Every structure is written in structure tokens, then in C-alpha cells.
Length: 518
Image 1: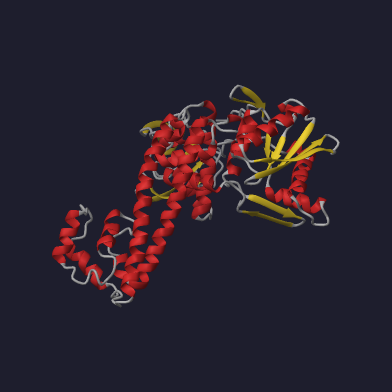
Image 2 (image 1 turned 30 degrees about the horizontal axis):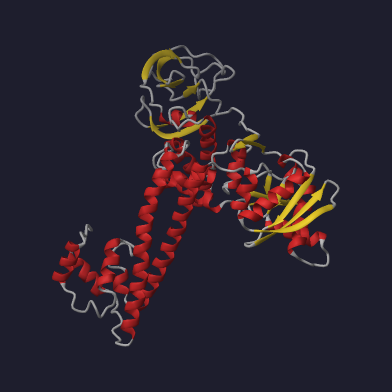
């Protein structure tokens, strides 16, 4: 995986070939986006404003924009800057052949503060600032890279599912806080408050007053009706419910509490049902994507996590200059801030948060099935990194591996992954070989390991003929004395001074039998 990354500078959208690099432009267009009306400014190479107008956010308005821009040259000669990287306006401009450059709203705000000293602001003025920003910084800006229809489909269902998961977490926290304040026993009765059995229990018994006559028989009937598969018996569940602080029995408060609990339970049931449907849709959209085999082949990625990574990674090979660009987008690279003698390396906050969550979740799961991933994580923790930092280090290592698979269009195979294959390679059997010890020049028996490591049974030295590193291992019982010994692993460079080790004499020792005293 040492080959240089490939990058394609041309992409095709519905038969129209676009370049990712901004070429020679005759005019520069800035669009101040709004929900109902867009301000447009057209500027020439010298910075002179040649046209200013507004268009409606409608089919006729966007068609009018494309027609008016055609008067200034071909689409490839009129790039457009806008403060949005997606949307129907961006899609239609890309289909018309224009190079669309997304710009950061914060960058435009800072640029406007430097250009407009009075602080005046208007939609037309913002469009002019965006056009000026594009004209002067075109060499540092990148054209938006559109995704295929399959990627957009996966991204739509995956992001909607993530939003629903966030809604479920919010609703569960609200329900837990409500029960903690008025009926703590119902909160801890089952393992998960959002589980179907817990929601059914709160539907049947939303308040402590409704469960006042709940006995072991009714609890057993309830568990049987809803197919409870937990390890707790009805008696244990009832004891757990009664062991908690007593719930509110106020007759005025109980009806209001019942309505609030049932409302949150209804929301959670609806969200859970929607998530089940979206999980099926995610699996279906993922199976239709041409790159699905690459991401589903990763260890313990799963369908949902693989779809999350694919949705944010995309399928445009020309979108990234290399794996480091992907790592920066996902927030896996640190940020260095240096000024004078001060230098600090910190966490990268500006990134794609969805991409970071997807990659860190995958990296955390992969170390439980991949020895290579487990070793990288263990080495990072041994180096003093905390769990989150070690996971980011592992995720960045995985990005390099996925990058190569993504470029080649081949699924991940641990056998072809050099570092992983080396860890998974079985150890060869030890065998005894007769030879001469390089330390004491004695004829002894050697233990041969992997055809390159020789272990002297007499003096307990291991000479490695490959690695130049020297490692000292202690506490390993020796084959001759039966007690603990030290094993030195190194490469014999220059011939050692003749003589028995530890004797201090400069004369060569006479070869003796293995195991004989010095």
C-alpha cells in the first residue's frame, strides 16, 4: 500500500464533463442564497461589477439565471460561488455545466468586515463580496464534488436515521427525568427504558396509582402477554419496583403525570417503528451502491455503520488528494497552532461531525475482531493516549487502508493487508540445530525459530539475523539451568572478542559439549 494516490481531475455529470480545478474564467458570479429570493452579482476579471439582479427560488427563476449567465460565455468560463454546498439550486447549476464553489459563511463574514469598513450590509452587497472573494482566491478554492444518485440515496436515509436516533435519545432522557421525579421504580424496572417491554409497561401502568394493585400474578400475565425474554422472574421485577422510592399518589397531579408519560411513550413508539423501517431502507440502498462491498467487508462494520461511512465518504474519486484529506475531513488529524516560541497541537473541531462519529464507531468495534487494529489501539494506550485519542489514531490508520481499497474498487481482505497478515501468520515450530555459539565459540544446540532466530541453549542468547533492534526479555526459564534467564535479541555486527562470555580472558575457549560448565 505504498503506491502514490491517484486523483482524477475530471468528472462527468449527466454527460457534462467538469474539472475539479478552476480554469481560466472570464467572469465570476456570487450568489447570496436565501429561502425565497437570491441576490446575484457578476464580476469581470478586473473586479468591475457588470450585472446585479435577483431571482426567485423557483424553477423559472433558476432557468432565468442559467440563461442570463450564458450571455457572458460558456458555463466552464463562468464559475459560481455560493454559501451552500448542496441543494436544488446547486444541483441545477452543476447540471448546466457551471463550476460551483462552496464558500464558508464565516470566511465571507471576515472578508466583508475587511472590505466594508462602515459595517454596511445588504443582500446585493453580500453577493458582490462573494464574487470578489471568488475572483481573488480562486487558486485556493475547490469546486464542489457532486455524488452519484446511489450515494445521495444512501446519505438521505442514513442522515434521517441518525436524526431520529438523536430524537429518541432526547425523548428517552425526558421520560427518564419525568419518571425520576414522580415514579423512580418504573424507570429502573427493565434494562432499557426505550425497549418495547418497558414502553408497554408504561402504557399499561403510566403512574404509581395505576400500579397500586399490581401483584405477582398480574406481572406474570403481563410478561407472558408481551413475550418478555429477560432473566428476571415476575417476583424479582415486582420486588425491584417496590424497592424504589414510592411514586406520586396525589390525585390532582396523577392525571397530568399520566398524560405526560403517555405522550412521551407514544413518541418513542413512533420513533422506534420509524427506525425499523429506515434500517430496512438503509440495507436496501446500501446493497444497490457499487461501493457497498468495500465498506461492508471491513471488520465488524455492519450494515448501518458501513452505510454511514459510505454516505459521508462519497464515491467521487477526484474529491480527495489523498488519505490525509479524508482524515482531515473526518476530524482525525490534529491541528497545530504555532506562533514564535509557542507551539500547540490540539483537537480538530472543524470537520464533518457525522463522518467522525461513523469512523470512530467503526474503529472502536474493529479492534475487537482485528488483531492489527487491536495492536494499534494498545500501542496508543501504552504511549499515554486516552481512549478517544487512541481511537482516532486507529481510525486514521483505517482511513489509509480504506483509501487503497476504495481507489482500487476491491473489498478489504486481511490476507492482502501486509501488517494484518504479519500478525495473523502462524508461528513456525521450533527445531534443534547444532552449531557454534557466536558468544563463546562452543559447539552447542540451537533452537531455530522462523529460520532467522537462533537461541543458544547454553548461554541463553538469541541472535536475530533480520532486525537491527535489540530487545531484552526477562523472566523466561532457561532450558539448561531451569531457572530464569535473560534473552538478548540483536544482530551480530562485528565479531566479538574470542573468549567465553563473562570470563574476561582474551583467549579463545576450546569448544565443549552443550551444557558443560565454562
